[in-house]
Amino acid sequence: MRKSLLYVFAVICTMGFFTACGDDDDSSSSGNWQDLSKTYEGKSVNLVMGEVTIPVDGKSVVIAASSAEQASVTLNNIIPENKSVAIDAALKEADGTYTFTGESTVGDCVVSVNGTVKGGVASVVYTRKLTSSIVGKWNLKAGAGAVYANIVTGNLPIDGLVPVLTPAISNLIWGKVSAVNVNLPEDGIFDVSWRPIGASEDKGIGEITKMASVQYCVVDGKFMVAVDKNYVTVLTTLLQQAAGDKLEAAGISIDEIMKLLVDLGGYYALPLNMKEDGSEATFYADKDLIVPVLTLIAPILKPMVPENYQQMVDMVLQLLPNAKTLEFGLSFTK
Image 1 (cartoon, rainbow, N blue to C red):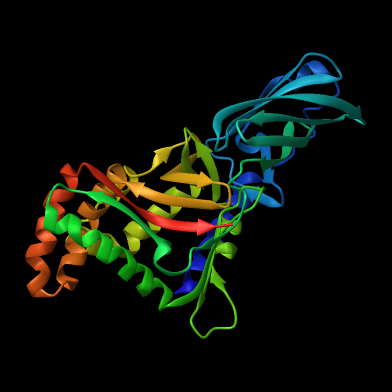
Image 2 (tube, helix red, strand yellow; image 1 turned 45 degrees about the vertical axis):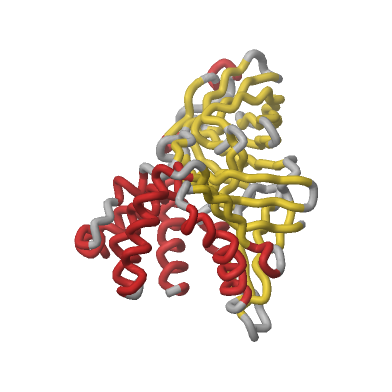
């Protein structure tokens, strides 16, 4: 299964590479700094984040040169934190090629650009450096503290089960793994790894998240896992082709899944709440996310539940949409 996922993402990233690489047109020289001021998109722009080539569909770079030494460079639908980021950049020219460098701070993110314009094509290398206190390697809390649950439905028997179920779920997790890590490096590439019981090496999704530049950011106090819209479009198309009939039979709609995501311009993001205090952090979903997710997957989960628990499951599904408080997630230490 993992090899298949890696193969799919490798194909997607390869597509992104060819999409991003436009043909240089040397006939349109940029020897005059006034000629730099335009919108670069499609075949007239190449985008690289660090060392990863980024697909350019739906993205653009606007350069407004004020002199031969200065310009404003605006990144549209490129940075998850903000749909449009303007950067004051220094210009230099050599042999008809202009280079531009600069940086700008967006919230807890420092965005740097280092690019060139030649033959009417802008090649932009950019980085995100996150300065938030959530940057770092987070380890799942040991024992019963791994699972966070704050659930108040108003039904005393159901609410009374929460203190019992929380440690039970924690024990279930630690019965399968000896470590779970969420790595949030300053370059913004999201990663999760875990070590199965008895294994000598970690497993994780780092290879996939790096290839597909799956990033994290904090927007309006929410922790967001952001995926480029181009990759989401390809993946949903592949999913529809490969399992559309099965999804429909199970009552699952891709359109409904997409409604769970937040539109960040060039990205779709899964929003999570977070509580962070020094060396401890909890990432959790609330009612706005939990109820739609359970509604989507209920047709799949219910047949897996023993018959003598079906009535309880139905009761829980009816109570949760009207719950006073519904929060569920995992707690970590740094």
